[in-house]
Image (cartoon, rainbow, N blue to C red; front, side, top):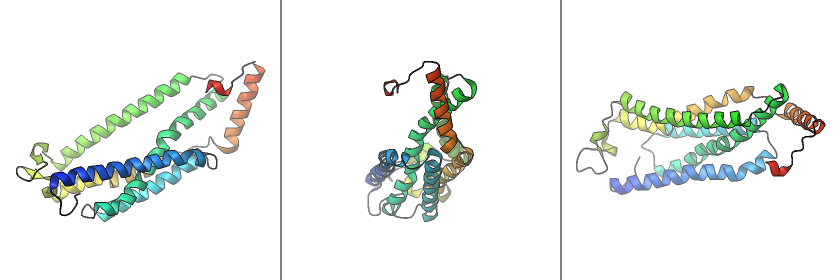
Length: 220
């Protein structure tokens, strides 16, 4: 993508800044809005709704194509990043709920297991994402040594073959859209909410009280 009428180097910098602000702004907006939404909706519904919304925005960007104006994509990029603001925060809250369920079901609570699992998943995400980018390079037959910021030598970003430009564009549109839609599927089977969650919380409190264990807000 580029800004028409701009020299390619300044266009690259401007596009990078625009995308960073749009994507970061969407996540920040989601994090600021999340506390109020959590008081009204359960975690599962928030994730499913935001995932479907972000997936639809990503598909819209894909169908617009990389020749569209970067400015017309700003609202869609903003919307597409909202689910990540939800996921990055709600995943920790849901991990705590799962630890409550483990304690309710087995009588044991291993907070370290929950933290270790969350850390492992984050590292696995980063590894898969990096590997995915390299795999795209290989599939597209891209030689990064031929890419330069200036059109004086090598091949500029705007003069790359259509399949390579499409491949890169798909990485910010189609791939995130499909990924969001796929990761919503397990959420339909997540039932630790509503009456079940209230029952777990209530019975755990009763067990702790009977055992003389008192947990105050200072412990959180």
